[in-house]
Length: 365
Image (cartoon, rainbow, N blue to C red; front, side, top):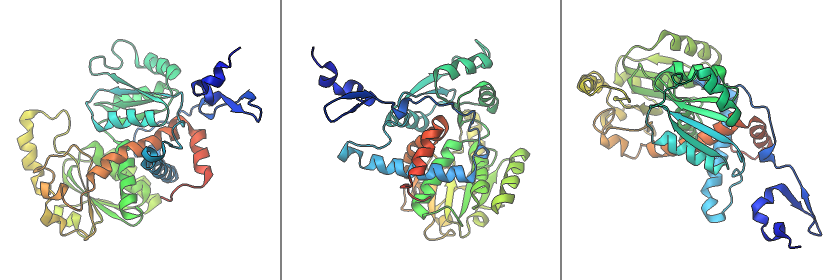
């Protein structure tokens, strides 16, 4: 009888080991080992510890390096890490970087990302969120949700027995924060001891999580702009800063905020959902905080410029700044992919993540 398996080894090679006399023995594939997934969710940066973030950064750096040589070698050491796993990606708000980075990331890890638009089928309308969460928990290993309101993602997290990741709501943007931190580590060598300045809308999800991230990791942050920061965010920041020694403060002017900083950060003045007839008024409100080449001269000479994109030249920053030598915005955008891959393994396959970290050959972060 023909040895079909021998002829078509690649079909199920992950199930077998080959002995000295071509004896095939079934083995357990790590990618398919059943494991009890944690009920750990990521809704804001407050849901992570400093140690956890540091480990995610180390794994992200290793994953990025592995992909750097992939085209030459055809080998990626992490290509089976989430084999057999599915991530459901719920989108109420449109996205380019979030959707592409998640789908590509899951593919590179051996799993699959499933896009589902909830703009036409909102959570909790056709069926209860409780039922949705329970059903998805039996089919997938993780959920990301990019939504308008924090209420949606929190309600889903309360009833899901698989990790729920906030891919953006009106209260936080933790996946972006991990990409930002990875970029700072690559550009500066470390986040320790730096000072960042943020300019723009202060009543904003990115602003809130930038504040939390600085307070969590122990570096300083000056924010300058317009808008009222929610009191609860200040409570979270104060609690984190008390442990880390971070200093997060509001500056009255852009010039005061940017003095001798290491990193300058902007976000769009026109977030999704801003009415067209409000745009001109918002431009006037935020224009005193526009980042120009003249303003950048007040920062340290080796200061880097960041924007989480999409960016509008002539609004939150001038073209001279975002297209200039201090800009790292496209490195920052690419790092959404690598940081999120590490995060997905951390949440969806914690045992495998621990094994990766325990190997001991990861870059320092």
